[in-house]
Image (cartoon, rainbow, N blue to C red):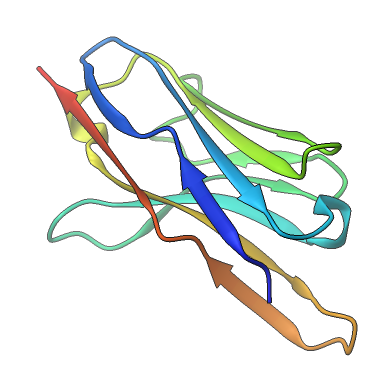
Length: 120
């Protein structure tokens, strides 16, 4: 099991930026895929961006060009840089880790979430 702790959420005006951080309890190289998700009230949790162990990234169309996922291998941290924020980006943002442990058991672990509120 991978422990994940998100930070960096808060209140920002439309057009502003925030950087979310996800601290992991294990070597990022051992995690197959790290993802950033969000869930707004009354909506399903949606995948925003992901980065795999090789460093390849993918983005949802809704955030492509505005959000950037990156990682610091030495610090075992993954980031989500969010620019040009819109009120509709308001949600709880979650970090996720998927992969296989030492016994090849699959894991799918979540952080506690961090609130992002974008005011108009």
